[in-house]
Length: 112
Length: 405
Image (cartoon, rainbow over all chains, first blue to last red; front, side):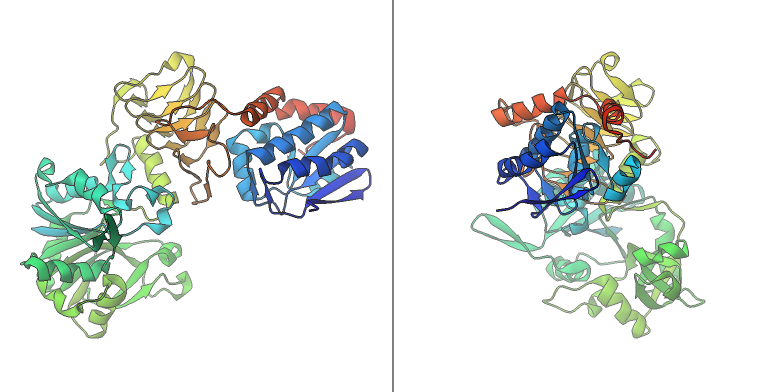
């Protein structure tokens, strides 16, 4: 199953989800599907707006993406987090690790 | 004087707090709301109290038993039935319970008081009963005046010049409200009230009996009373009242434990070296708690019995329920947590087990398992990352990403 879609906006690759959960059942598949985009683009923004649930496996997958991008000298940011996900991020201090934005416009505004 | 305390409700709006604890048993610091009410009734000359129970009834009945500790006679009226070792709740409603008790033993043989078991109050009940007798009412309701913009949260009573209730409005919009006097759930009745309660059906005082009495022109009166009334209907209400109690702002609730630093109260058998933690009061730490060195605790904060706060955990403006393990990676801000759930004051809930974060929040009595390989990897990963401020600076330098502030 195709978990993600991607499109380009200027030099930014925007990846969005086709599923509302990122958890133990699909975290590995997500990791594999997102890798080509991370290898190809230096600037990746992950649209989290349809995700209603993320568990620790999902968080682990997101951390892997961030780590990979950092190692490649690229950037990996998240935007549009919904409340259940935001609450979990804060509970686990993930908000101190990831660069989070409210919307794609905020990212574009920040980079222009 | 006799009183009935209504304590059968499920407390749906207080989920997940009321999942394992009936609403009247929710503690204000170390004391259940219901205990505060019983103490208040005893101080006002009430000597016999009957409590109707249904949801998680044993939690209430086993705690209060005969009531001798409070200097009153307690009785319980359970609403439901037992089958195959399981209790099945069948609450009768606030009016139905009166009929059941009366049919059982004619307990209410004189003027009596009825109140909800989920509010803290310091109402002068003697004055309320005196006002009730003065008018010769069948029923008298304690009313409180609230700002017009708050009426939509409550039932509103419309009075005539003599104090007789002419009609009720249930949670009216402010612009449609005919009064700013709200029903506080404290009533005085004559035993004859039973005539207006049908048999064999759940029946409610507020939505069924009172409107019928008002419609029929019966002697139902409202008395505006000035008293401290803290309704604990929602998670946000409970959170607020606890924050006030921790700060010592509630006259009726004293802080338990020993005050080891200004505003920092600690119970017996607690392992805690405040010199090795970052602490800012006010806070109340119950008994038998373990707080490991390096924890950050910022008040108002309550930590319940037998909890374990691991090194480097950060907790701020939160309520930690009994027997909760807060993991070293946890960052709790404005939260209510136990080993089984984590809630925000507006009732939004996270399930730690479903989220796979039992190493962040768990029951402290559960033996600690070695964390599995996946969790170990996760922790290593997260610990490898610098704080986001450093990341942002790095991103700014390399890719011109920055926050707009």
